[in-house]
Image (cartoon, rainbow, N blue to C red):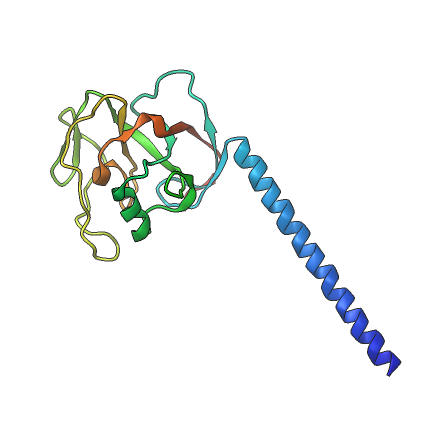
Length: 188
């Protein structure tokens, strides 16, 4: 009987040790993620840009065409619909979405034309075909085009399934968190 009781106690102790180990590793990982997030690091798990660790860098100049940026989308009905459809991930921006990583394709004053693909000031934007439906067969609303208003940017990703300004139009520059810098990434 004593041997059985001792075995039971040892099993409980063994479970507690593993529980504390797993808890410690989990808390350490969470603490590391919080610390890295506070230092401007972000993990990208979307295919719009390479997967992995990125850093938000404060630009020392105005954002220009060709810059890769992190941006918080505005908390609008259109973005809430995108979140409900699964186009946007959960995160800390308004509306509980993660920042997007996109390339600035046009800035204030430039003209956007969309007719199956995007043209900026009359010049075709590579890899900008507009999808009429999403991966679930749902109709995609598209931006009608026009002049990019002041304090707005038109964003693009070359990934064919990217949710960007082709569908929502220009986004406010005050949502830009900074330039996106690859730290440790993998492009599948």
